[in-house]
Image (cartoon, rainbow, N blue to C red; front, side):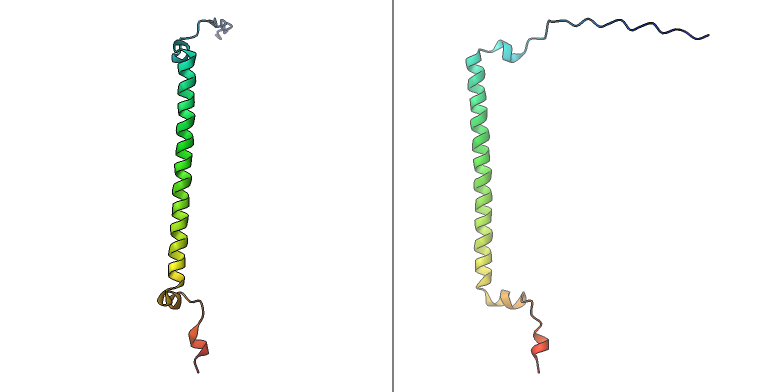
Length: 86
């Protein structure tokens, strides 16, 4: 015997939302916190950019130092010196 399904009763939606911290705090405090968060994000981005620039400068300095090192240039030369040998 097959049982008939009863239609699901519609759930009651309550307009009483749980109170959040944002609702409890003064709007001035919330705006101050948001501005502090924005400042911290900006400082972090600035620090990351500074670190990236320093790393790039260090790479360029190392490359320039190696380009003036004859031993390094000789070892990393792409030329085949044997074919010029008589």
